[in-house]
Image 1: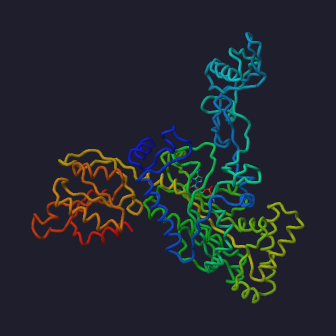
Image 2 (image 1 turned 30 degrees about the vertical axis):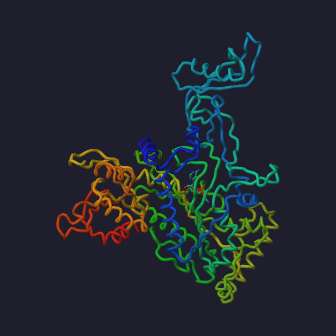
Image 3 (image 1 turned 30 degrees about the horizontal axis):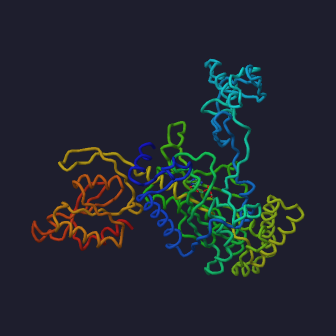
Length: 590
Ligand code: GAP
């Protein structure tokens, strides 16, 4: 990671935010290459999720939204992590991320200060590894009481006991931690000039909620019918307690989220007689009208894995992690986390990298739209003509079976959402009646990815050190960023062989201009050609075009108007006609 962080800064992929002022923890800036890389990631995602599909449309919503949205989504009440502070250094940790430790715990009831007549009755405790003398605990404890104003504290009531697998102490210095306290991760602000409770608003912690809040508007204008999706790319903000691992956990980041709305299984069964479920592992193929939520979920997991492979993350660097029942959000039916094996990931018993989350693909039932329906008091149901027609043709027995199942699911949601049993029963029955008339709240599958995490994964994956010949053919070590041509910041570098030959320079600039409106081109005439290649290798530029004397026709008419095309990874060079260059490169980077 050190090499990657250093290259990111040296070559202008990623800088620390506000670096001239010492930086700001959890915030990052993308330099010239990083900005292009991020744009390419977002464009690839947008293109594959919306432009190449008939059933997904886009949205670009505001970052600050009505605060009731966050009440409905559950972020106001539950988007909080339990956190603990170190009593000595004040460093903050997520309670569930403190590593369990064992050792001897030393306890103190307080301390006195004889010269000033001061005392502190604050209890304190320190954990030291077995075999270490008690003096290190006393040193830390004196430090604690000095921070409470006792210049030369005398410790009181020392006692010790062995402890096993405790998470009450700071793993870095053994100091006692505070009791876990909830900490809301949303960044608060005020809308308008008055900083009053009425004007509180939040920077969105995810882009997803705007999609749910605008669901009806998008449905109306887009002429889509369920199943269909709404995609959004944009900034999200979380006041992370412990930003870490370079950009992996930041306080400001970008998400790429799709909410894909589907029929409830009861509606699918009413229309098609049965619900198709996953038959085998892997991609289930082209979407079919009789798909239930499970197969739609599998479809999106597989689509997303294909996406990552298509931009250069090999399948064996990714992990498909199925959340266990006790890890699932209460409304989720299934969630698959797509993990990438970052260099900082933990290792399993066999020493294999376990991976860290790049994206979550969640089957969220009809929870989100139902919440907004209740909180905003506006229907989020859709009318499904096919369902209405099919329902009227079902036997009374089938109608009542499906109706009962739908009622049970709705009543369960309403009860969990806090509605009293009687009301949940009444509303659930009303929802089941609506289903029979062709109305329902769509269910949703949500593939939710992070742009910054993906950029970091691509950078980690691309970093390579190998050997390449210098100008005299001698092998030297090189750093090369093997970024996939689809996401590489610069697609092609154009070089005149020599800077001081006006004909070469003129021709090279012509080639640059020929390519420029079709791809990102970098023109470089400074230094030996080998050095120029090396610079582009570090920047991840997949192709290099050199204009030489053959191009000018000095080696005969056959080679006139040809250039050498160098491949960054294979380091091969081929001669290509300038007239064919644009089409050839366009095909390689598409
Ligand atoms: N709407 C669902 C949602 O927001 P999430 O798992 O909290 O789910 C989705 O976030 C993705 O957003 C993650 O998989 C990750 O790629 C990215 N993400 C979340 N928190 C992040 C952070 N603090 N820094 C960088 N990326 C983050």
